[in-house]
Image (cartoon, rainbow over all chains, first blue to last red):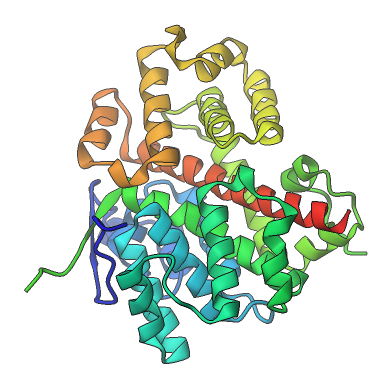
Length: 192
Length: 167
């Protein structure tokens, strides 16, 4: 992990493809921009994905439901799982965005800073530790997982729907981390 | 019992209609619907552009094999055959066999990069695909496809262990 400088500071994302031009976008493309996940509407990322309209039209509601569907796993815990996935996969931009969402929801930025400073083994309260360990294993080596990986989640009190939400959010970031890092790059804040 | 028919994930995971996990998945109807929708637009697009249906199935097969997901691989092998790509199976399964065209070899190299080492990708990787004639749309579609199958392998692993737990 040490070569990656994960941060709670805002990180820019630099695209590697020319962006779709909003000024000449079709009505379908404009609708797809509006339907993109909160905070990303006219971002370089969405204007990159817009090159393939049909897949963006499916991915946005998939992402929104995985992250924001009501009830089930609390939103902050979904955000934690996406930060863990992003650390495993090395996506500085994704980790920045979603660590700040976690901090906004919980008012506990120190939990995220602890992960960035101490790595994936940093101290977490037991329920968050169970979620983080599961997200790490699912991100890193899904084929090696067994039912015993569920035991800590059950001990922490997660029910079936909450575990499905955890799987969906973590899987969504197997997706997001790959798009983000292969269609452009994170531009971290300059070191002072 | 909910009335949403089985999708590709149900079939691959072996979830019977009306079973506990099939019903659980249907509590997240939008994830269910758009996971299938993503599959369909990426693997069976109306207009495939510069990456054919067979090439798309080959890419998906490669991701499933690298993730050691045999059931998902069987699904994409079958799609590849349906798309008339039987002869591509060897190239996907044995990359060093030399059976792949220059374009397919480049697509599979890029697939491995996106699936297994996304942090090592650079802008030069996209310039190489462009040099082979791929458009921005083709490149985004390939990334979306590899990223989507990476989503599927995690979802399937999660469902598999939930099944094991309940067995």
